[in-house]
Length: 592
Image 1 (tube, one colour):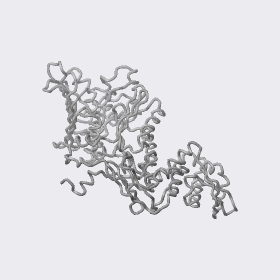
Image 2 (spheres, rainbow, N blue to C red):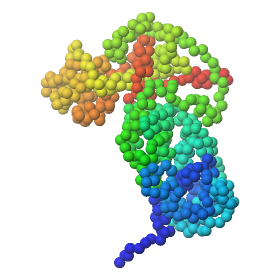
Image 3 (tube, one colour):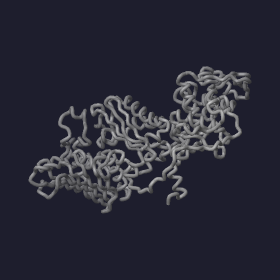
Image 4 (spheres, rainbow, N blue to C red):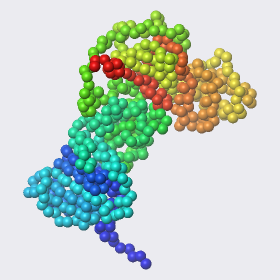
């Protein structure tokens, strides 16, 4: 018969290690967090064989006194908290007092430290949970912690570790997260006696650029939002820098890297309208919140948190990112200044060629009536009068962000010129976004105007489509359609949304009815609303191979500048690209 008994401390520590220490990267995370809590301004990490043989972390923090060294390796001993109420306002990275005891139970550990004011430094060792007495040693102010032969006494755990390269990749990822969260600290990383990363103390933007590279910084925009006691700072990549995996997603809460389902959902929702299919966004974001409003004591690894007002945090993050992504032409005013990127990556460049800012565009026109205007602007026919000569611009006009049209390329792209260089616009994708945002705004305001058809359109329909019309008259009217039953196998369209009056009416109606039939009228106006509007917008946008006049092209450019999220179409693809004169110079080797 089994008898209940207390477990030995060594076995308790090994069980705890199973929760905290999964692999060498887990060890590195705990040690680095201790160094940061100790106030270190420089941290050096040395790893051998992916961390399986050695992990050594040296910092210049405040150090540990000789009398406290044994407690540093004891379970549930910490300097971070002292009372129950401290759990409700944790500001440090570590606080549980489990990490070092757990590490010492499954490795050969050496801890050496010197605290300013002590006569000399001290060191202590642990092997498989057996701790020696402290003894004097030589050491500068700060702490060195060595972990050798991880899981040497747990061969079953050790055999589940991956290859040296894989384990080091996990260690490097932990190093990257810690470095991103504390830009004011200098970090060094060595693997097998080779330097892999050397980061100077810098500001947040410079650290992000140094860690994630120039490409990320050049395609990302700044985020800076605050409301009451919560703020969100950092950088989010534009949708055209999306990834096939979630490998560049870093979110920090009060300096702690977290993986939180609530936050992930808020970010997915913010990108939902501009991200293509199964692509994933890239971002580095720092959420600062009152420690009393977040619980970090959720999991031993401290990678999960709970917010006191989860809905408020979700909405704050969503609206902050949505605002940045929705800002038209954010590349011009929110991206990282090229000078900073150049400084961090230390790329030398030749002196830029000086250009005149005067824009002289050819009077390029095409023989095409301006019927595109009513589609784009509705009844704003006075816009046709703004340029009677069909001239592109007057020399004295200020140059807008997307510039002025030069002409079309193969009936697909609009070529425009701004102060920086050449703008290339996918006219179908751009107009699709414009129409989509118009439909969303009109539906939100319950003002989606109908356009009665001079000659109603009839078409053959199956009985399910006929039944869908009969059951969803209110939904169709809300969407700007007037469709009625003509016979058991035919329907008649008497009105469509104004912005879609030039679309293929029958195909548009069939697609709308198919969506309503599949998902139901209530979902079409709620959870499936944007998907349906995207389908409708695609029908209403100007098609490829459609020739536009210069005036019509400029009208589309101005509408893009006034439209939220106009940098991407409804499927997340980019609508325009810019090529600077400096880049064009490089292509033609000018100035070399």
